[in-house]
Length: 470
Image (tube, rainbow, N blue to C red; front, side, top):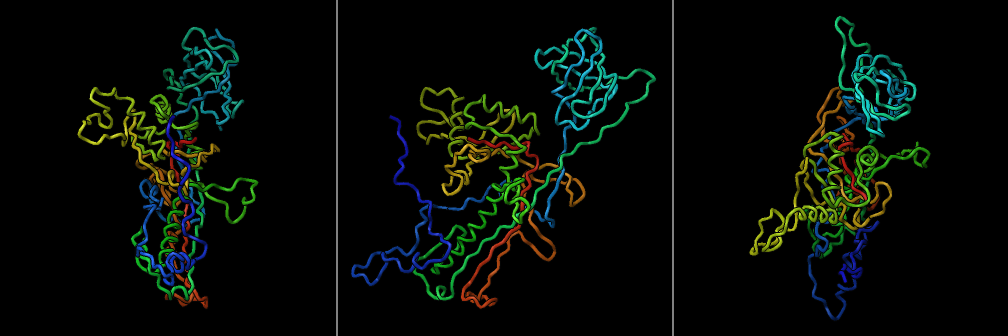
């Protein structure tokens, strides 16, 4: 029978963070009651049983931060250089030396067909093809725009009412003729996003601040000491910093007709939402063999063809990639040879890989956010964009037209824009209010530590990203 990890004892999902600070966390626990006749042996330092508990690191690795002074961030991304129609109807019977066609592609705004263009026409069902010159054009939109081809071949091979693909490959004109009629304008795709305001607060009363705890506490950012409330303040700060990243990953805009549409909190376009909407999605589980990865590579060929890519993945996806790569090696006679395939019996067996090259360079790294049981870890619901196993991010930067700068600019594929001006910087604001802890702002007998940020993430070239879902 195959073994498995037992359900009990399990991991805790309820750490000591509470909505209010409780003295019972450190000060009055019955286990440390010195009135007890049997005084316990106590450890003065808190044991860090969950290690580093923060999950923020993703955007720091792949992105950048830059200021913005508007409620709306807009940018333009380049369209395709060439045009191909894949849903064109043949209106004339096969065998003629000319044939009429109607373009039915719903994505078309207006036809780019012009007299003199040379094209390849292929029957989508049979593969029959012809090459010819456009000799007449009917302008318009989908289902209206049409053109006439005069074939280089003696007869056309496309049957009437066939659905065809049209690819433009050049043009040809006779001697002493006029030039090309009409011109084409560059097509840009305009995208936008809006920043959201993220807040948090920690409060401790002045009376509690006057009592010093005796357990030494420490946090992931190096803060240490015997004042118990400082630990809660530092954890609030760390939690807020995590939310600065996870909000950029998970945010969604309020849908039209929803209760939040038109309100003050209409959401934002997070990374998962954008990639799910206009990027690439690999669904139905993880790719576990080269054939499945080849389908991913072939899709990337049709997009930006970025040379280097990083896959941020959960633990199971990492195992699947390692097993896939290990399967490419014929196991040696003296034992399993993983890794660089040069292990020997005197060294620790390397059962993992950091990356591979197949068409493009792919590097993989574990993403703690997808493994942490208090965050994405263990969520496998197959609703759109919910059960996320990994995210492929292109390395480097891309060129876009920045509406604020009014010129082309190099930007990382992922970057955060935060609200800022000469007098107000909302990247990461923190301030203390109340009448305790050095604050003298209100008559509240407490210290309140406030946190605020206003930011949005810009996902440029989402067509180069891949989201791996269940």
